[in-house]
Image 1: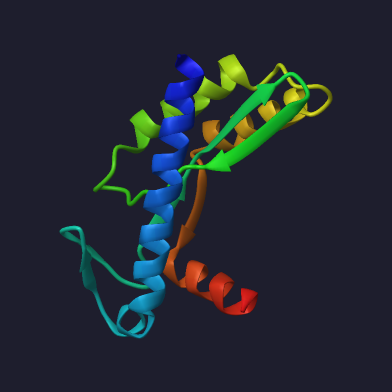
Image 2: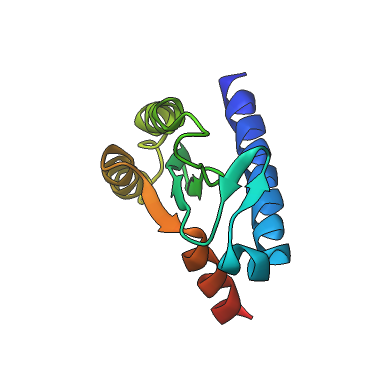
Length: 130
């Protein structure tokens, strides 16, 4: 049952990330020139984004994923960071051979404050991928 909860949270996080990235790409030109509102929060090209990773292992498979992008001041970074770290601490170790390796990488990143970038970084990455 706890694995089902983790799976549901992962699907929700992926959906939220897709929605956010689609909004960023759709509004790219406006974001480069000034602020816009995203769900009631003013954002622009220099807005900082933070994501945390989660690692889960299923004996012979280990998987990692990132949380949806979080906006400091809008989203609760501490709660999301603690949740991702807790899930990884409990569920990440058990895969052979990558469970311990991915778990340590994920814990290191989360305990250092997550992965940080700006909306401009996201746009540059999306542009280079196309």
